[in-house]
Image 1 (cartoon, rainbow, N blue to C red):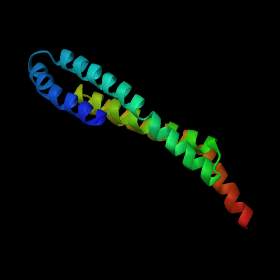
Image 2 (cartoon, one colour):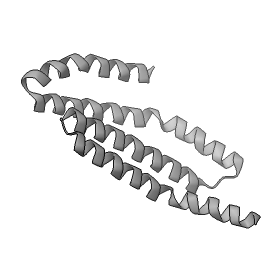
Image 3 (cartoon, rainbow, N blue to C red):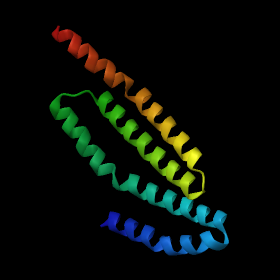
Length: 127
């Protein structure tokens, strides 16, 4: 139910942002950032039970919690990258959006490096 409320908030803000974009584009961007920040804070709060459930699944499967951390940090990097790139596009800079996406891809690889090492070590153990 919480997620539906957040989606409704975003949908309701589309019209004011569109109207502001014509007369005051910088205010439209600020309104977008404010709504995005509010939605993200509420989403992270709503995701707490999900994170506990995933942690329980990792424990039952015998998978180290460090890998859960890698998964969550990579997901967070992807989300931040997407939101930031979209804000850059809304601000009218496709080049900055592309740069943000490139940086986000590099960050995801860096974050996932411990997981990649573990997979390679596991594969080397078979040979």
